[in-house]
Amino acid sequence: MARTAREVLADAVGGLAPADGANPLVPLIATGEAPREVFAALALEQHHIIPGDRRSFLHLADRAAPQPAVAAFFRFLAEGETEALHRLTALATACGLDEDAVRAYEPQAGCQAYPAYAAWLALGAEPVDAVVALTANFAAWSGYCGTVSRAMCDHYGFDDRACGFFDFFAEPSPEAEELSLAAVTSGLDTGLLSEPTAHRYGRLIQSYELMFWETLAVR
Image 1 (cartoon, one colour):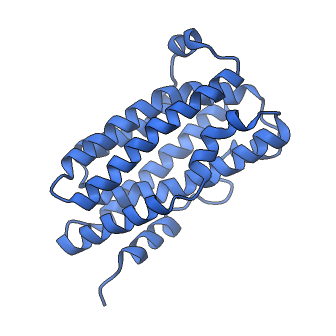
Image 2 (cartoon, rainbow, N blue to C red; image 1 turned 30 degrees about the vertical axis):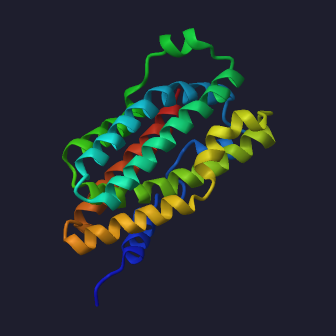
């Protein structure tokens, strides 16, 4: 029996989910044990990550032009990065960061490995394989963001605007789900989707995601 897009994505999300305890920082944030300074570092790193990811998603959309459903998925992600960068301003301000501090900051390699790999995917991956890999990663990232947002309010005294960056990613997006299903359906129909390759990409990008948190944890 032919597999459905929903089955493909469910297998990727479940099979590529990080192990319990794999993230060294989010549990500390959840209990208020992490230093407040970690949010400033996170905001500064994200100021470099988001523009890079946006360019990667736009390039994937361009490469996927012959597959309109796949291209639409990546255009949606690029639009989301624009909104995320807008929301990041409130977090940076709440952390006492001004434009000079943002410009002067030197990003850390461990935090920037994720966008570097996203750029690699943008250049060389079959776009629909990247859809599966990124969808699995976003499921993990969304969970982390929900935990961080709640802790920022409960333990660190941040207001709703400062938490808006994390709330944006934590909130379920029916449109993102519909677009990912349509993209994977297209990949199945055209024979362009390779699940083993997509899972390889997903495994690596999940590792780079954890590297981001690990790097912040040892500051």
